[in-house]
Amino acid sequence: MRQLVVGAVALVLTGLLTSGCSTIRAQVDGSTRAGEAPVEVPPVLETAEWAVNDGLVSVVVRNDDVRVLRTASVALRGVDEDGVLVGVWDTDSMAGESVCCTVLDLEPDEEFGLYFAIGEDAERIDEVDLSFSQISWAQAGDPAAEPVASALPQDTVLGPDRTVVTARVETGEQDVPRALVQAVLRGRSGRLIAVVTGRWSCFEAGEVRRIRMELFQRVPVGTAVDTVTVDRLDSGPQPDCS
Image (spheres, rainbow, N blue to C red):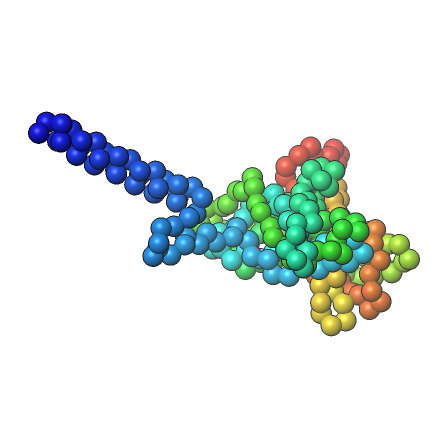
């Protein structure tokens, strides 16, 4: 009789242990038991639109959260029309150029442009998927940051192997030692063509400056600048503006 009791206890323990392992595994890999709904994890940012142009993949993301996204590093995964992986691109594959693939100070309901200079393989991409790392959010309810500067597009010069965008940047009430300036280019139909991004230094308070932004890709005739935005860069080495 004692042997039967011990065996029954062993069966109960075994059942508890295996049930616990199943639950833990479901939490780790997202799997569910029969009859349970899968757990949906919302993306960090929504992909609003993307485009391929002359070897450049440009993506516009949107912040649907109620908080400000301070920073996030982005990796792009591209597959072809058959679902076969074409490649994965991030700051490492872009030769450490973080300006291409890092989101900065994105307010709720605002959009931000990313670009990945891939080359010939870009033409094979039929679908893109973004993943995020090194994510930093502001606290909910924190006041929005004051704009550091305003920018207006002035001209777009189309060349055989590059595109030059000129913009007028007017700084606010404070000096901006380093700034990230971004332009979103669209075609005549409003379709996204490309994202152009660059860094500039030593904007003085109240200064008005004309800048040139170069994109080393051709764009279709009729392409124009949709928006130009300016973000302050507080990370990394700061220039001596004295």
